[in-house]
Image 1 (cartoon, one colour):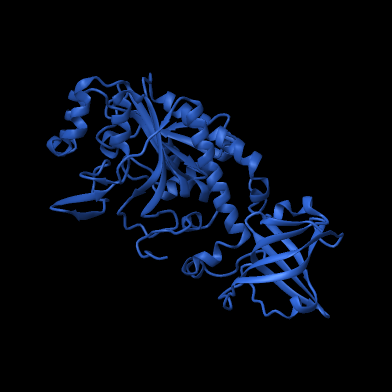
Image 2: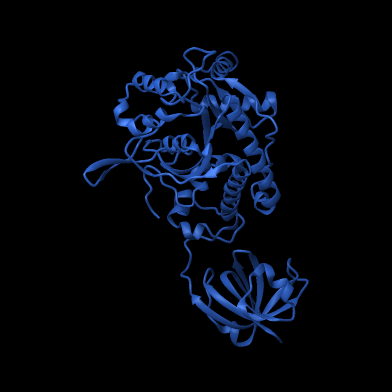
Length: 432
């Protein structure tokens, strides 16, 4: 029999019937049937049954140990894949201790904190791995779409001199003889790249928010998918760009992640058209139909949820754009609305009753920008490098940012945003 010297992935084993191959992976299951042992091996591509006889069946093995299996691939009608491996040699790379919880059951029936405390182990569960396979396809499809639309990927600093959103929700730390911050958004930099002549830019990177919201929908470090585009006519162009991006992304997830999606029993959302409501309209609906008050200039968590249900029933859509927020609740760079005094050309995108995007048109005129900073009570001198960029010709522009983990949480209907982060950071968790 011919022996393959290179490692063969489990998904490729079927094409090696009659050959002796080398497999490497984790022991998923072990069971005895008389003098014969059956070992299910797992690698990143799938699982396969391995049959242990004679001396190989006497080796002491624990579940989740990492091993190298040498054996002949034979056909069988006793496994789903139609083949199994008759083992001639087992080499142990790392023999596992007894695991604190079972990772090979259909459902991982342990608390989330316990999962996160043993994250490397819980990430081995097939359904949990599926979350991150879908997440990776989301980012890949986002990147592909932006590249197809002529956008250039950029990489901006995460150590900054000022927060881009204003307010106090930034992490501060000493930076040599100065004070620095962790970036809460790449907003200033992606705008400056548009003004530098790149016109269309995007970034996928972490952002940091020092918010003490220890809730099921907040993280203090999350991944933001940021977009900025120059030479727009209005904010509607930005919303349409995001709609088209989401349509493309979900189409690709549906095409390439069928196995992973089956774990969650969710359908690909219809993003052919996304309804729009002004903030005022949404607040009136909440007040008149559902007798719920809203905070000034915004929606609260309960309001987002109720509006999401209302839109689902009326428009058959999981998404809704909420537009025209007042100047008081939007950052200083947001374009004021000419048609609606006191309001801005801005929006939030709600998905299944939760905000997953903020976006809008930005101010491109330096004098208007200076005025906006002063109205917000901000010292323009502290933002001089940003404001200076607008002195040398700046196109009308706008953009948006999608919170990746929150998007995946809502899409897969996970109970907690921490499930959509491999190693979440919240108000309490710094490890692993």
